[in-house]
Image 1 (spheres, one colour):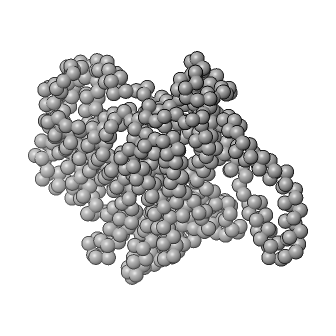
Image 2 (cartoon, rainbow, N blue to C red; image 1 turned 45 degrees about the vertical axis):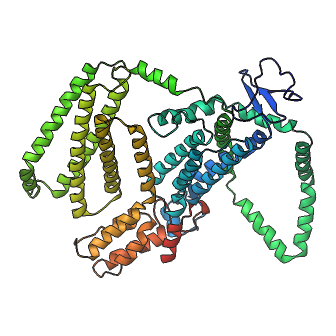
Image 3 (cartoon, helix red, strand yellow; image 1 turned 90 degrees about the vertical axis):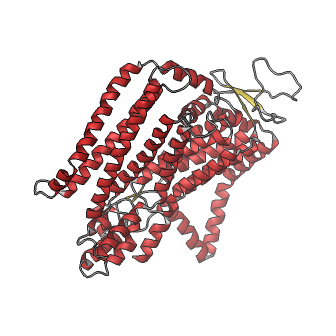
Length: 556
């Protein structure tokens, strides 16, 4: 619980002992404000902006759970085939446009609050807001896929991190190595060091004078008048049949409300609201944002570099030797390997897939090793040690060769068996690894801000993946190759059952081919009657709507 402390009459009036001026360094304080002291003796200055924000974030917390949690389709028609198949319920409807709307509301809340606190939005903040919006927009355009889960985490991380650049409290002025520190600071330090601020904002609601008292009086008056409203509405319903029908419809709507779900979302929404409030409050008032600084992080990094170069360099040098022998063996035995592919004991699929996934894992391990060397190996401030540069550049070059080899194997696999989600996602990962290791190779030869480049590549490449509409690419690629005669078979069941509504246009084209017409029509019929695991057929809630699914349902 917090206790109010009377506000000063003016800025020149003497301040209570121990209570600091509650303002940003870059803006003057408002003419009147309230200061609250929590049980932990931490002071939280608040004004009208925090009062309104304390109420708004509760709504955002409620919407977070209500819109993000997959909805159960218990409004399914009783006795239908889907009703029987799923035990009286359709499977869950995963959110679509609701995620986009949530981030639009969250961004609007942050921007309006920052404007009220007179926080000037930097150029990086404006660009960041656009990136957050672009990251959230695909949910309203494309059908839900397993990539949605990672896209939600990615967008949430962007939204949290954006506040540091919007309020100019970021440790790293540009994305780079220190971005991880900014993410840690904005995710944990700033919010949890200002959790008590929400209670200060709420408690100030009753100390805002005549305007607030009038609002409270209006609410009390409405509550008292509820019985009168009920009597008048009943009389009007008896006087007109159409009005009575409307009132009955409203009654049915409230009867069908999932009260338990709403209570649960509201209960868990309060902690989310506290978190959002503390995040905005801390950045706007610069409270808790300077716990970590570039100087302190540099000191921490230097203290962490305790591992001997010899202790790390020796096993890494042996590992580089192993990679060299492996690549020499691959090159020298390439003809023999390709001959083995066509033997009865070794299938083409096994050759391509096995090599690809193993080398993908090796590339990931090598990235971790190079990161460990940079962070924990002993070295003096200044140029990167020559031994580490040679070791790192050699490992980067060998990894690039292995990445190219793995991509080549997967291209062979694609040519023979077509595309699937797993194949596309892993190919995307290896292409990103290729760019990252190319940057690391150049950095070991000539120093530059490689951290900025790597963060930008990883972030923009994932954003591009969410916009690529992978399911549509897979369906159209496989169907085009089959219809053009490049392959003799096609997995119709995979297109119909495992992919999202993005596959519907390609399935319709496939249904015009006599060879697989029956299979394609059956897949379309199943999708029409049952839908998919992430978007079943029937009356889906508006939260699951997307333009692509809407278009697919029209085609069906």
